[in-house]
Image (cartoon, rainbow, N blue to C red; front, top):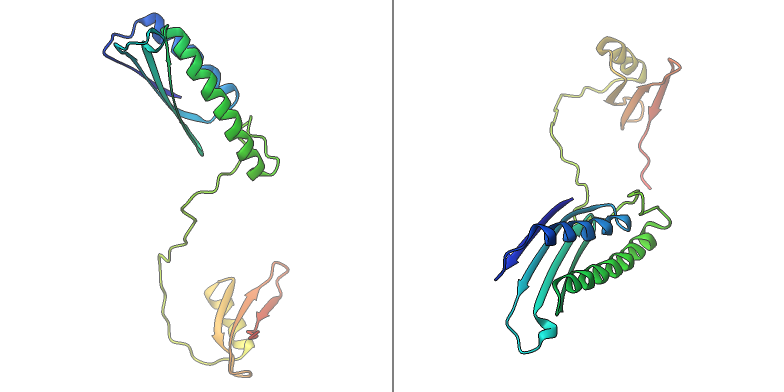
Length: 180
């Protein structure tokens, strides 16, 4: 997990940095697929001393993107608040993904997430060849000569396109089209 901690209007001490790393690290117990976490800490001059420190956090993982913002009088209280909120959000999100996965274990990362992009096969090669009409026996001879597993041909008996293929047992199978 990649973790970025930045301070706005203040310097982030190593003690605060270690505290944030430890707390954010605990989120992975609920959701191990967290990829990136960004934490922004700022100190503001406000009239209310209860809102002196503000912490913003964004957590991104496989199928999850959560954001939260909390304020407190003490920096460590603000960090604890934001971790508590993110923890609840991750639990809720985990439940939603569990429902989608119909029982796959999200705690172990064994789930599929539907993506916006579906697989679209790509034609990478096109072959063109002249077809002369032939019988099934001639097509079988062509399979032997070319050492292929199948042969596409125009059957002289039915005047339809057929596929002759060699089965694992050494015999042949014939595929004939049937409009339905």
